[in-house]
Amino acid sequence: MGRLDTKNTKALVAFKEANKSFGATKALINCNISFKLGCIHSLVGENGAGKSTLGKLILGAHTLDSGQMYVDGDEVAISSPVQSVNLGLVGISQELSLLASRSVTDNIVMGREKNFGPFVSDKVNRETALDVMEKYDIFLEPDAIVGTLSVAEQQKVEILRALNSEARLIVFDEPTARLASHEAEKLHLLVRTLAENGAAIVYISHFLEEVLKISDEISLLRNGELIRTNKSSYETKNSLIEGMTGKEQGTLYPKKLAVKRFEDPILKVENLTRKGEFKDISFELYKGEILGLAGLVGSGRSELAHTIYGDTMPDSGDITFCEEKLTSYDVATSIKMGMALVPESRRSQGLILSRPLLENISLPHLKKFASLFGVNKSKERQEVILKCEQTKVKYRSIEDEAEYLSGGNQQKLLFTRAAMGKPKLLIADEPTRGVDIGAKRAIYELISKRSEVGESVLLISSEIEEIIGISNRVLVMSRGSISAELRGSEITKKAIMEAAFREGNQ
Image (tube, rainbow, N blue to C red):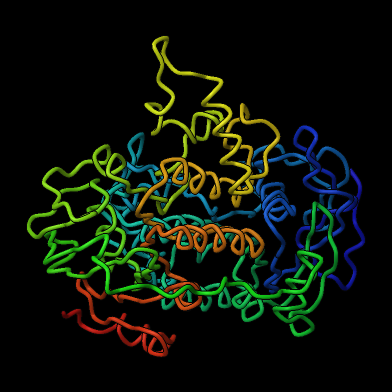
């Protein structure tokens, strides 16, 4: 084992000439980078730039192909997450890794449980969970089953689990992707407190505004190479975008199209109610319109979308789609009538990651390829390839498993599947979550094209700029009700936030 000269650097973790490949894909190329104690060091770059690969090397999820890794100046060869944890290197992943059937307490103390003799001490472990919640001002019901919690609450459990360790370095991988604006602000304060208390922070995010706000240092990666590391004060949003993509930002959002509201609405929702989720929801959506649905996490947006799509039954109220009142609520009926859904979580709700691209795209539409001898594989393959070209999915082979695509291309895959059904209504729930600026622009174009051909879009997003940039009209939800309807110049960040914190009313 060698030793790295850390004089005057205070580097806890450092890489020298680090290389990592996955098959023919070079994920990290001759990377030299260090992470200092007490410093918030952000990694930015497009999907596939090498950010998450670096994080996973630190956490023992990947091993180096060549090059050196140093901890406290000593060369180490980490080959498992257990080794990383023992060195005080912990992480909070973009994709949650919780035990859904166990309690909040069980998940927080997992791997660090306290025993009373040969038995696990539930009382002591519960007290430990409550102590870490109080210390970091993050509160959840300790006995709640994790699988019953919202995505945002599950994210908090993941954070609490990482904090319940003697962490010297914490990797945050897209930590605010699932959080509302006020929750993200609270997380930023927590991250700053951790750094001030001496921890090294590795912060991976596609939200460039938050990177500039929270970081001490920013490293920019492109195609597996480290382009530069600067103090955050030396960078701007435009400089980061230009460095990530090799070109200037340009216009992020497509031009909005005019909507003909004198025609009959394609979707009409009247007094729709589902106990504990939303109440007395009424609105209309017109042909070619992009209707934004804004609000805080937990306001009922996604629950409303899944009821419209037929995933869940309403307790009362009516849905009229294409002038036909729905009496049957199931996904198969919705797809047949012309609805499509891009769900909030591509991994748990959208894709079968272990199956090929071909199957992920064609699965809901197999009747289109039916023949006397089963599925017409040639026709299925041709249409899948055509739709991938139209939605600009980057892939090597449609027989490859979906898990090997970048996050942005996985997200495009969901739009490809939706487009194959030629829907009249596309429900897009957090369509750009966890993707880079280039993929966002591509997804906005896909949504705009749906509008251009006369399809309607119900857009749910926690990114206010996204809602403002692409929506023709905006509904804001608060506590299960619609608290505001905004049009034209009324669609501002201030108006949306005020309505999001308001008591919902019609």
